[in-house]
Image 1 (tube, rainbow, N blue to C red):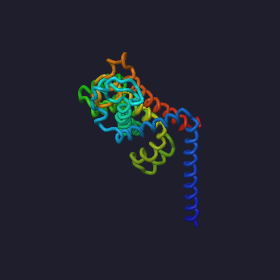
Image 2: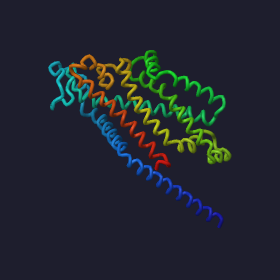
Image 3: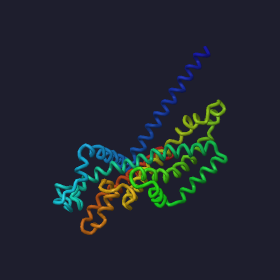
Image 4: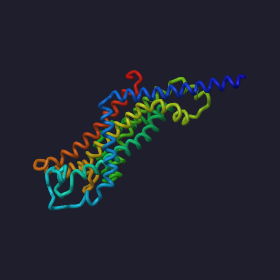
Amino acid sequence: MVTKRSKKREEKLVKAAVETGGSQTHDIIRAFMKHRVSVVALVVLVLILIAAIVSGFIFSEEQITAITAAARLQPPSAEHWFGTDSFGRDVFARTIYGARYSLFFGLTTAALSLIIGTAIGSACAYLGGTFDIVVMRIMDSLVCIPSLLLMLALVAVIGRGMNGIIIALVVTSVPGTARIVRSIVIGVVQNEYVEAARAAGVTTPQIIWRHVLPNAFGPILVNVLMNISGSIISASSMSFLGMGVQPPTPEWGAMINDALPLIRTSPYLIVFPGIAVLVTSLCFNLLGDGLTDSLDPHSR
């Protein structure tokens, strides 16, 4: 009899937890849909992602990099929507294709920074003591160095190219992620269910993975979106300075750098890739703002 009652009680608790989780998810989605600007930003990002994927099938590498002297420096027209550059290459095709590089930098950097920064921040918050003091002082030292200066120094040592940019972006992004995760996890660790898990003999990695990180998911997700936006801008800046992706690769920052001598005679060569950087990074920021309000129970 006791067993049947305990089973029924457990079933009720599981059902209540499922219903609560479902209602919370519904409330989050409904709150996010009220942020019209964030919804538009999400739609734009989806379109940019689709365009980046499809561009690999529509445009060949030869179309992107081939030199056509007869078509050089043509203004925007029905044939060339964004005009052509000084080598006769179609700026529209190169801009759409360049989204592949910018999104790759942003998403890869955010993913690696999330993994490394979450591991460091969670360990510091949970273990504390000397480990926390030493590691966080190292993170603080890296934060104090201007990110662009640190990236230039790292790329100068590692070498130019995509690998150098990714490593430089990750090194400059991890400290901020680690500090945010640490502050969030410290608040979560003090809750009663974490103490109960400790008393039950649950190991530290299991507590962090099962109890701490899921409750800190919302703010961490918003930080990831901000990292993507910042990484896209930083990667474009590095390419613009000649320390990132090298021509003729159609990366947005490299395209702006190539067109800089023609800014007076052919300003469209800078305008379109510049707008691409602005719109993409802005949409990630707006999406992060919408999620911040949607995930906050007080805002909902």
